[in-house]
Amino acid sequence: MDTIATAPIEGQVPGTSGLRKKTRIFTQTGYLENFVQSIFNAIGGADDKTFVVGGDGRFFNDTAIQTIVKMAAANGARKLIIGRNGLLSTPAASHLIRLNKTDGGIILSASHNPGGIDEDFGIKFNVPNGGPAPEGITGAIYHQTTVLQEYRIADVADIGLSRDGIQAVGAMQVEIVDPVARYHDLMETLFDFDKLRALFASGFRMKFDAMHAVTGPYATAILEKALGAPEGTVINGVPLPDFGRGHPDPNPVWAKPLMVLMMSPQAPDFGAASDGDGDRNMVVGRSIYVTPSDSLAVLAANAHLAPGYQAGLAGVARSMPTSAASDRVAERLGINSFETPTGWKFFGNLLDEGLVTLCGEESAGTGSNHVREKDGLWAVLLWLNILAERRLSVLEILNDHWNTYGRDYYSRHDYEAIPIEAGNEIMDHLRNRLAELPGQVHGDETVASADEFSYLDPVDGSVSENQGMRIQFESGSRAVFRLSGTGTEGATLRIYLSRFAPPGDDHGLETQQALRQVQQAAMAIAAVQAHTGRTDPDVCT
Ligand code: VG1
Ligand code: CO
Image 1: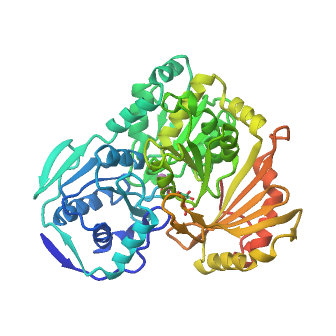
Image 2 (image 1 turned 90 degrees about the vertical axis):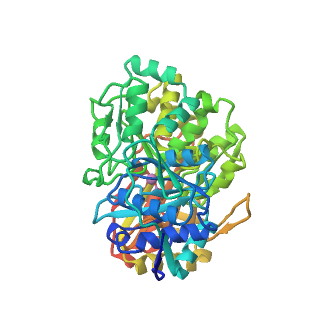
Image 3 (image 1 turned 180 degrees about the vertical axis):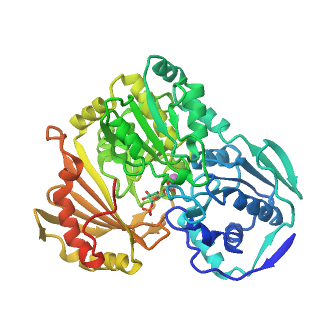
């Protein structure tokens, strides 16, 4: 074992979902090592502990895993459970942590950010409940990075990652496992696989775009092999270190070819995509894109049709910028609903306490109490189970939903890579004017209320402040402003827009058209053009 002297490295601050940086930063000597040692230090050492380790297969994944193996051994860990070839989707890692009752896990991913030597890399620590470390722990990890003086690493050869089974690294055991098998078992307990097989046998057709990311093997094993969907149902199914030079973000912009197919006369019945690490999902029907906020609401309203949820739901939680569509369902069902800050770590306590069963975010994340991460393929299977039971098209299901609950028109506008100062100025400027905004008229909108969201966790009493500016208009529309916590270049301003059309209203408007009025008011209030020179967003989802 070697103890290597090091010094704190600036800026190792975990964001919304772990530490994300340019790959070239992560590959600098000591960068990964410092952060991994800081994780171990923050949790009281790794001695005699067991961890799950895996990642989304992006460039540097395997090298990073070899480093983590040597560091875990030198820090006295008892055992590591690693996905074959270093691959584990984020939800599968969460499941393995829970199933094996480990002391946590280390997940290597920058999720929806592109991969490669000139792109992004990331690392995060998950706690024993299988979920992302809460702020108390990420804060402790960051503190460790600022005082670190040494790290421990065993001077041993690389291990083999390609063959399942147990091997020894000094006194530590390493078990290489099939990344898909246990996850597949779990899905079988939640969904009616016979019914899904019958659905595909009856001629139902879908395309699942794995975006050359980690979900390919999971989707192929479950959709094609277990459920009998025709070969070719899963496209871009082989994980690649650079995601085929794509941007593994399942939204209408980055999953464009799938969108084009689904809007064409050749469209199959159902389309779906997932992100780099498999925790996000996009759902699209023939000629209809389902916003993630609507998807959460539809899943909440119909989950009882799947065996795993037939007893009903305890409640539904959504992140604050997500539309209120799921609140309306919870209200009608008479179950709990919660509004949390952005990031899956805030759902953990609610799930652990049994206060909610489903959770979701507007950024294409949906999940349940089966793991403690959002889960892309799970959401797709739940949709399929609902479609198999209801025998309606996606469009019919949405129309029915909107007729019952009303429609929340929704879109997120991202202004990417703006100067960090400009991003901060916009937020400061908004914060300073919150008190004077109510009553102001901007274009056709009048501000009803304005505040900065902060969250009091009802389970552990922790408070998370500065979680975004909310502006509610008298029309019922809403605009929310946040700075992204996952980017690696400058700042990304996210403007979340929504407008409610009650049952009976026109639900057939084009989304951006429906939101134009609130968008113009939002741009004026935040003075986006004055601060950034930008008039249009880079990405609208
Ligand atoms: C984004 C999303 C957020 C999500 C996070 C991690 O964060 O908005 O909803 O939880 O990514 O998702 P931010 O801070 O950039 O807005 V994943 O799939 O990238 O781990
Ligand atoms: Co992800």
